[in-house]
Image: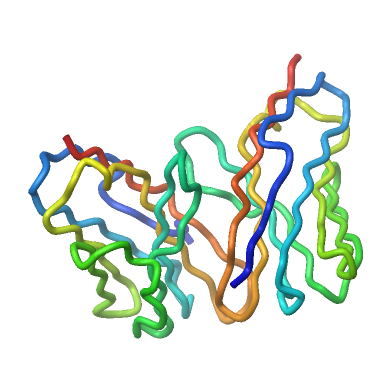
Length: 110
Length: 112
């Protein structure tokens, strides 16, 4: 089955700096890659996603890149703000099977 | 839409008791998923339904766990009897017939 690895497990940045979280997946048939943000006491919230026929997608301060050949994808957050502090999960989906990474705890220091 | 609704938000029970978690998916969503989240194992898929029919329950840890979806707007996850190692946050999620999946707020279960 699919195996998703996520790095780093924790990330601390200064407000205004950029943050990058990376994930790799094992099944080349996976074709959908969402990113979720989970705040304390809440469920994961979809923030951006990318499909396998696209290499990059951007939405304001967040962007995701996908390298199908290398089977890795990344989340980029620019101009980070304290409210970006949360746990971020990547996932890879094939058919109805979606596997999640272990999560990255991002802390943005004011 | 109010999003995925789960109840209760918190549940504290004693070992051996039956626990029932409830979920109301987003109207019109064909798929419903139950996940368990722990520090040690992260987000694990327990079971999912398509059009109220259980499709894959290979993630259900033991026979003590069961899930039902009697209609398109309601699902339950039952643990009987509960054990301390079942303590976790249980999430329900739903999605329409595309990729975007939406999570509920979760039920934090503590089994003493």
